[in-house]
Image (tube, rainbow, N blue to C red; front, side, top):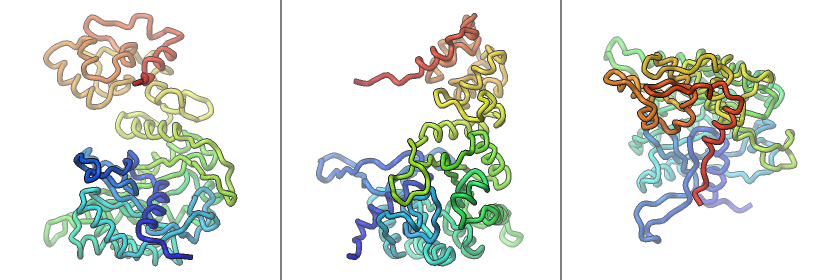
Length: 411
């Protein structure tokens, strides 16, 4: 078989990396300002966007070191029994690509994951060496996110944390039973132990040393994890329950949900189904409500007996419609934690409302200027000169709200 060129490897391994959830938007189409006469260029392959804790959007080169893998996980397109096209970067090629893209201002960082070849330690050692060369030899100051391998030695994971901004270890699936069934070569207890050790190391390095009184640099972006959604029968309630435990036990920066969407492949052991992208979206919204809006997991999923989120409306609106006795809330008197439960009001909007009402009473028009959709907010609030009246108890309120939130056609 003819050796692949660097560009062919990039095409294969950037496409294979799209199943690793790490970003909020996909790469743009390729544009070359030198040919079009415009300004600014993008590279079509391997570029994605992630967000820093301060809200900055960071363009990343998102690739696998290799999509060869010794494991045969049923849900993974890169499993050993899959017939996908294979490729493998050398250490030098990843360093060269990263620096080349960075110098052209295509990217601000690198997201690197990999299939496991020969052994977890050997694969992890190559990923660590890439990060080391970028930091030490190339003096690369950009963002680096490494997907670490649970079975790799603690020394290698520690070395990775010295050079990477963020480390992540995949829990794979929401339940141990799911992992044992669909990824029998992986051990859930090993994954949890690795995540616990990584948390301990991050906390240890965060403490200032006695000698220098300085904190050592070690994965300052913390750790995250990813779980596959839809490959097994776990309900949304079960998934969110697992996420809550993960956040509490390992102090994760983020749990990423990845919709199970297999590519047609005769070697697949799982049935093909429509990709549950809306389910993934609703899980992210519910996760956000638990982390930043004071919602409990049981509150979010209590509205349906099957433990699943409503795909037609967002979780906050679903909760509000199921708990109408909580409303309407007076925007001039209600506390912050209560206002955060109003559909359509985000944390920034609520904070602006609290700041404004110190000086004057808020009217419905004032709320409309602050939020994106006053139609969604209106039935759940009382403002100066405004009361929803019987609208909150209307039988068709859900239908009206869904229609008011629909995206209108631009053409």
